[in-house]
Structure formats: C-alpha cells, structure tokens
Length: 440
Ligand SMILES: Nc1nc2c(ncn2[C@@H]2O[C@H](COP(=O)(O)OP(=O)(O)OP(=O)(O)O)[C@@H](O)[C@H]2O)c(=O)[nH]1
Image (cartoon, rainbow, N blue to C red):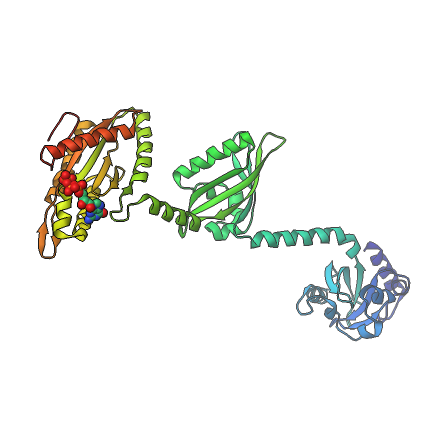
C-alpha cells in the first residue's frame, strides 16, 4: 500500500480545493476497488474496479453506507475501522470479510485513509480494497478443513489426545480436545502445561498400571489400552484410553488416541460380576467365586510363605429346624449365620456358601493359634444368637472342620481335609471345631 500513499501525496500537492472526487490515477486504471466516503461512511464515488470486485453496479453503491458491504454491517470490523479513522484521523489497514453480489465471501485487503483538507473542509475517507481471496485460498481451505475436524473432535463423546514420553519416561500431552472439561473438570491447556494435574488424580494402583502398560506398549509398539479410575469433582469415574503408538526419531514414544468415560459400563460389569459371584440368599460368595478368590488368596500367601487356615462350616440339625419351623425359618437361620460371619471375621477373609447349609472360610494372614481363636469366637457368636420367629426364640449351632493349607498347596485337597474334620466334629456331638488333631 506504499504506492497508494505516494499517489495521494501527489494528488494533495496538485489540488487546492477539498477532495470531492477520486484522484485520476486511482480511478481509471487502478486494479483495486476504490471508494470515496463521507464522514458517515456514505459512498460518494466508486471506481470501475469496485463493480468488478464486489459485483455491485456503481449506481447501487453510491449513496449507500459502506458498512452494508461488511459481513457484519452493524458494529462489525468495517464499522469499527470507520469510527477509528473518523475519531483518530488516522488510517486503518486490515482484512475485511464482505459479501459479493452473488453471495460468496470476499476477502478484501482494505486501506481506509482520512483525507484531512483543512479545519472547515468536510472530512472525506478514501477506501482502497484488493481482493486477496485467491492468495488466501489454500490457507482458507486449510482453515475450513481444520474447522470441520475441530467440530468432529469436539462433538465426540470423549477426549482425543496425543501423549508423548521421552526416552527417560517423562510424560507430556501434545494435544487434548475440549471434551476433557466435561470428563474431569480440567481444561486441556492446564493439563498440557502440567500433565501432573491429570495424572495425579488417578487412583493409587491405577497410576502404577498406567506407568506399567505405557512402558509395555513403548517397548512392544503394540496399541495401548487401559481402563483406570480418576478422581473428579463429581466422584470417582472410570476412563478408558485406547491409542496407537509410534516411535519418534529422538527415541521418544508417541500415542495418538482417545479417552472415554466408561463408568456406566464398569458399573454394569461390577453388578453382573456381583450377580454371578454372589449367593442370593446370604450375600456371601457362591462356590465358584469362593474357589476363584481362594486360589488368588493362596497365591498371595504362597508369595509370603504363609499357611492359610481353611474351615468347612455346617449348621447343626438344620433339617430338623426346617422340618419344625418351615423352610423360611431355615432361610433366616442361613442369613443370620452369614451376618454373624461378617461381624466376627475381617472384611478381607473369604466366606463362601458352597451349597445348602454348608459354608467355607479362608482366613487371611492368620497364624494357626490366631485362627483357632477367630473360629471359636464365630462358633460362640452363632450359638449365642437368637432367632425371633413368630413369637418363638430359636437357637442354632454350627460345627467346623479346620485344615491348614501350606504355601503352594492344593485348595481342593485342603477343603477335603477340612470336610473330613467337619465330619468328625459332627460325630463328636456338633457345636464344636475339629482340626487335624484337635477338638475344642
Ligand atoms: N431353608 C433352607 N434349607 C436348605 C437350603 N439348602 C439346603 N437346605 C436344607 O438343609 C438340610 C440339610 O440337612 P442335612 O444334610 O440332613 O443335615 P442336618 O440336618 O443339618 O444335620 P447335621 O448336618 O448332621 O447336623 C436339608 O433339609 C435341606 O433341604 C436352603 O437354601 N434353605
């Protein structure tokens, strides 16, 4: 636009009267669109290029306010630019979005120059515009593509991310989409500036799982997938990350993937798991779940080189209780036994209903003497409990057989030994505990 200033200077020097029409050189052969405006932005004159650039005929432009050409006629960029020129008596240069007569968007590089001719002369504005749409086309196409991509990413029910790990293991996010705010209340910018803001919210062991699984994926270059829990202002949520992985030239690792809220799925899985592992009458583990959990407990004890006390428990004369007081009374006794177990044992001890009125118990981290004490307390608590049934108060007792499972031993075999001891407890008179050699 420097050439324009020179033309204007010459024009001013040659003229003695205030500007009422466009300078000759800007009018006829000038490639840009030129307008002369009054201080209110009303178009006084246009050059022939104006019709070519905007598609509007001269007659339809002259007398009209120039702001009507802007995409935002009211308080849009052109309106603000005019205010600036009129109030500050300074020129304005910038890019305006206007509409061609055929409706398409025009990108107009625009210079507005106030023409100050003297204290009494009316203010005029010279507006020179060049259509730079062709020059901007690749950038505009890129921006539109990016805009579409951004809209898709923002509309996704989750978070698109790029996670980077240096060869030394430091993690940082190269990108996080806006969905993060809905997912955990953190903004992408905050987490990109400090990844710990997100990572420190992971629930204890899940943070370790994240570190381990990322390390595995980084070595194997297999896709990364992990469900983990995170603290949010609304409570703990389950998130699942799924990402492709690639090695960077510097030795770092890059994961491109997405993060979704799987809390509802995890809740449904937990409910299903609960249903298939729980005995409906007592709420205790069923046989299948007891044996599965028992194997895990045994593996843990084996690692710590500890023996595990195993007990088989059976309600005494249960058939008689059923026959005398009805099946419902029997059910209540079974439920009372389950409650008494929960009261007497620790939350991480295993209690399962193997079937009918037969139960099994595995005690965690208990030495044999300690185990006897715990089981005796349970036997006594059952014997002391009272069942109020239809105005009657009933009592019932249990017999127990105990075995000790050595590290690396066989759970089924130990339960068999405990069952054998239980048989001896029944034979010895019931309401007692029998171990490999002991009778209490
Ligand atoms: N109410 C109720 N009874 C059950 C349930 N499952 C099994 N039983 C009953 O439990 C009784 C078990 O009786 P038995 O195996 O003869 O044993 P018992 O009468 O307890 O005799 P001992 O074990 O020798 O003291 C049977 O009558 C079964 O019908 C149940 O879910 N609810």
